[in-house]
Length: 233
Image (cartoon, rainbow, N blue to C red; front, side, top):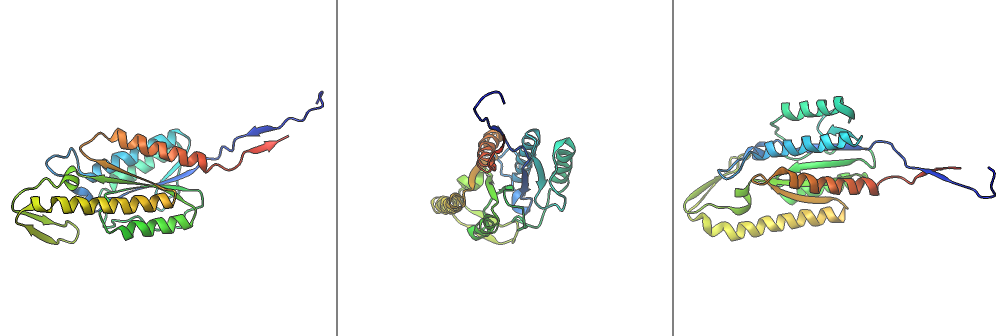
């Protein structure tokens, strides 16, 4: 007031963001090979709880995407989220629900994403049209990546109960890996077009790597989505 200059004080908008987390608990996620440390659903649950813990500590609101309850912050919100995750370890749904989430929300979707790519693409189209940003994490058993089987082997789809007998399973390895790589590439490219992220994780490796990489992407998205600063003279 004593000078001839005008000063502007800028204050960062501090409203908490809403982050929705979904973890696939369908039959295929309960697979565990002899070289894995845990089932896919157990690792996906650990990742979901770790994400929620980090987000709540950062002041964000976290909710389960397949729950009717709104996202919440603080220790009570995390406890409610953790209770739902640990009580619902099985599900008949292998894809997340398509809900009318508010614009600027974010979602974390954890699954094996081994179903046809159209399922993941429909999710991207739905939430992308709402202005929601998302992060897809693919959790696989090492046997699902390497196909380490030899000789006469019978494969069974745990969801459809379809069976296939391979007389020499090793002859399928190269074609299987090519098809898995093509599926990943299609989903990853669709995520990039939508400004989403896509990451992969194996259950025979530590969870920290997948957690830190995805949380860094989530933090970058939260920074980019912040509204313009409020200015007061």
